[in-house]
Amino acid sequence: MTGYLIRRVIQMVFVVLAVAVATYFLFSIAPGGPLTGLRQSQQRLKDTDVARIRAQYELDLYWPVRFSRWLAGFPSGPIVIAGNTYFAEVPVGCYLPDAETGGCKDYVYLEEMPKLHPPIKSSQGVLRGDFGLSSVVSIGRPAMDLFRSRIGPTLELMVSALLLSLLIGIPIGIFSAVRQYSKFDYLATTISFIGSAMPTFFFGLIMILLFSIVPVLISEQAPWLIRLPPGLRTAIRPYEIASWLPTIQPKTPADRFLHILMPLFVLTFFNTAQWSRFVRSSMLEVLRQDYVRTARAKGLVERAVIVKHALRNALIPFVTILVLQIPSLFAGATITETVFAWPGIGSLYVDALNRSDWPVALAFIFITAVLTVFATLLGDILYTVVDPRIRYS
View 1: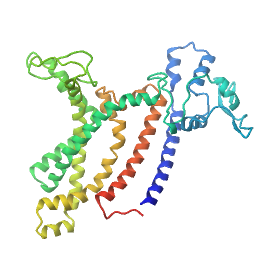
View 2: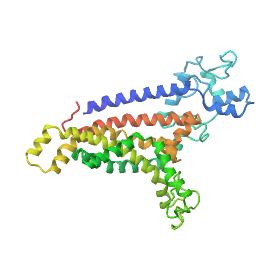
View 3: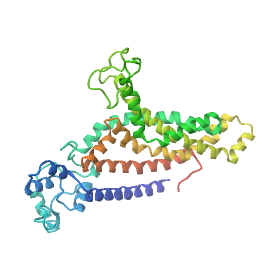
View 4: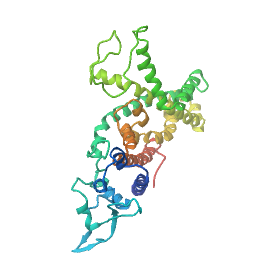
């Protein structure tokens, strides 16, 4: 087991490094960037101003050099070892791009970097937990500070949806498999198909229409209807959800509960639909095995056969899906958070992409990749817990 874990950790390091290289390269060659919006809003920028901004965000460096500084925070300037200077004359970037020739008016050499770059706070590298500064969403603020401010709402929504989905989806899947082709099975299958086929953004818009907009339009004819907040995590000012109920004050438990209801229902319905179908199919496959029929032939109670013999083996493939939910606890539900304006990490990522804030977007992808490879390793370990017959050597 120890040797297997060592091999897996080494593989994880190479996988994360490959993801980092690929994503950084794709972001480097993608159109847009921090200077795009600035050039569109201010047409009279001089070449020196553009060069200063490029140097401030290290956009004047070639992408391999930028990547090494982003990943490991390599210091500026040439490498000095035992009094000897190395790589001092190696060009590492283009300080003043020439739009006419497509070349450079002035190359940046390692020895000139401290003079050309203004004295701003530089990144220490993602390996040290520093993902740089936000360039658009919150200019000059560290990317990790943005994630810390958004992780609370994301965990609140995702953990609640995960627990409710497990508590509802697994029993439904088990009962549907045990009572195959019953009325309950047909009903659960139909609802599961609807939940799996319906896009979350469409379902979220339908929820806003039914529970926020329609009650307002027909409030005179149906004053008893309750109006739910259409978005955000808390309200800005006091509000009423119905004329016969007291006023809701902002940032109270009741206010937070009303705001989380719709996004929580959308995520729970979507996850429950998928997980119940998966548990049902896995249980049906296990119930046909010989050892289950043998357990019934020995006279065991049906509940013991289902729980002790069938369910434990049916949960082995389900563990794979469950552990892959770990990255989503950090990443959040990007589409659902955007529809309901939930101030989580998922909506922060969408905002960073739309506004070309590459440091924030790269930090999101890198952290998600690390959590994904960690989740796969955790899944392999949990296999040995669910099924003692599995051994790694």
